[in-house]
Image 1 (tube, helix red, strand yellow):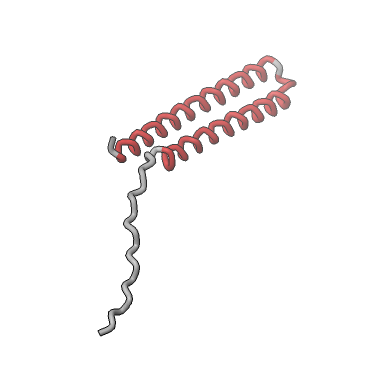
Image 2 (cartoon, helix red, strand yellow):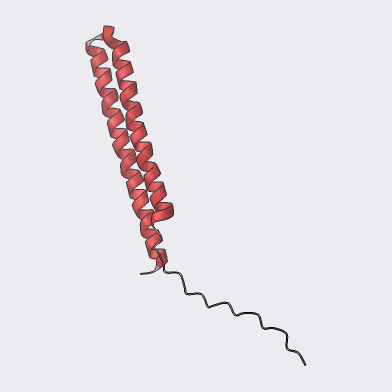
Length: 101
């Protein structure tokens, strides 16, 4: 296959992976925020512990999402190129000694 095809497929895979990562992180943080808002509505006096727990959980979700995005970026930059064999180099010719006349 052509080298540009491998590079293109790597970019497509990285884009899809990044998109799925962002969607998953958005859904996770949204669900955590919704649960925190519901918990605060049920027990207004527990707003501080709920807020702290939600922020810690959201930070962990963001960290995992950032790690996944970095993996997608590294995959697009390095792993999409196929390993090609190095061409055999011709042996270097020795310099000829000057010819005496």
